[in-house]
Amino acid sequence: MLRLTELKLPLDHAEDALPALIAHKLGIAPAELLRHSIYKRSYDARKQKLLLVYIADVELASAELEARLLEKFKDNPHIRPAPDQSYHLVTRVDSAPAVRPVVVGFGPCGIFAALLLAQMGFKPIVLERGKKVRERTKDTWGLWRKGVLNPESNVQFGEGGAGTFSDGKLWSQIKDPRFLGRKVMLEFVKAGAPEEILLVSKPHIGTFKLVKVVEHMREQITALGGEIRFQQRVSDVLIEQGQMRGLTVQNLQDGSSYELRADHVVLALGHSARDTFAMLHERGVYMEAKPFSVGFRIEHPQGLIDRARLGQHAGHPLLGAADYKLVHHAANGRSVYSFCMCPGGTVVAATSEVGRVVTNGMSQYSRNERNANAGIVVGITPADYPGGPLAGITFQRQLESHAFTLGGGGYVAPGQLVGDFVAGQASTQLGSVEPSYKPGVLMTDLASALPAYAITAMREALPAFGKKIKGFDMFDAVLTGVETRTSSPLRITRGDDFQSLNVKGLYPAGEGAAYAGGILSAGVDGIEVAEAVALSITG
Image (cartoon, rainbow, N blue to C red):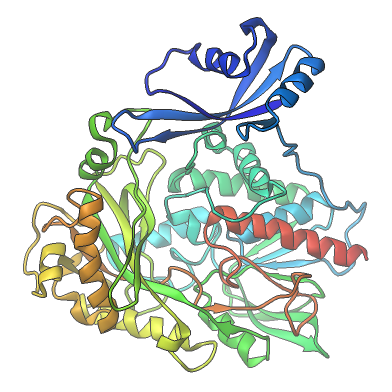
């Protein structure tokens, strides 16, 4: 089978245009092309005429013809053998070990770690401090609609992790020579995600569909002998001579605690498990501060973004709501960039701690809400918040507490019009853009919401972004603060064997440990860590 790339056709091309183009590119008769399948579809909007761009896998009439064409096009980078992307388990056991592996956290990384361990026969135990996804959804809506926060069940904590209340983006820039990302995508489809995610260039699922997908994956794990315990928070770890030996677990349903023997623990914490980070640091688990980013959410009418990005093709059903990716290097040396862009989505209350305001973005699969939103964030480093591995958490909390005060309490977020922000004057009322954040937005002055260097860089970046996307710096666009949970502020460092540098049997994984950034990369990391655990157990 061959793989052809850079196959370009007009947006509304005929159904038979792609096989005809393939035959033309290969210089063969149409009858010699047995079948083709679309591996990936994207679009090129850089020129006035928008084109669809395909990657296609092609089966030919004979192996001899395929060999002849490979020799003919050996110097053509766009005609190559189709790679084998099938996944093969690294091991398989007939019975689970007496001390079963434990996965702490049931977000994307924890889900895939548990799923792979279950598929290999290890019957893992999963400990998730939050609730099942549907119960968690009710608690999350309680914050959005009533301003009532459950610190253990919210956007950050619970089945599915923070990615459940997001755009459900399923793409990444990680190196993936084993095509583990394909394994992640196929498991999602198996669990009920739309098959379209396998072929579009920037796939997403959206919150409502993710809920069902997560439930189905949980059912697969339990059907294979895995055990998932909800509302179980790890409050302590037992380490003997540098080796994991057990966990202390608090049952949040009745307040009781129990000890769980554990020699192999996948630490799939999200980036908001601050109390767990502090406990691990106290117990001497090696970790270090790392760079992350802080900023605001920005909202525009989705139609404005569609017209700026797609021109006359805005609104085409095959293209959907347009997205963007922006970066600006400011004169003060700071980088300002868009983060977690959510087309046709909403800005959501994403705090997990009482008396603090955090924003994030979310979209449904349809992406048909009125506004586009994205984080506009500024990169910071440990030099900006000195004080050790936990100093970044202290820095985040200071910003989040101040945002709560600026918003006037009740988890109302502080907001400002872009035009007023750039001009350095407070906003007193909304313009044409209605913010989507609930429980609500109080218009104010965001100048004190971030460090002065971040405000200066953002005031420079927004007009620069307006030159790249017409209307991006429109006066009435709304900024909502603060976005602080862009990534983990620390790294629980691991070695080549995926284990903690100083605690054998402890496997830091996913976003919380700073080894992933998004659903897809977290899933891939979960697979790799599960493989490492399995090979360690089987020796």
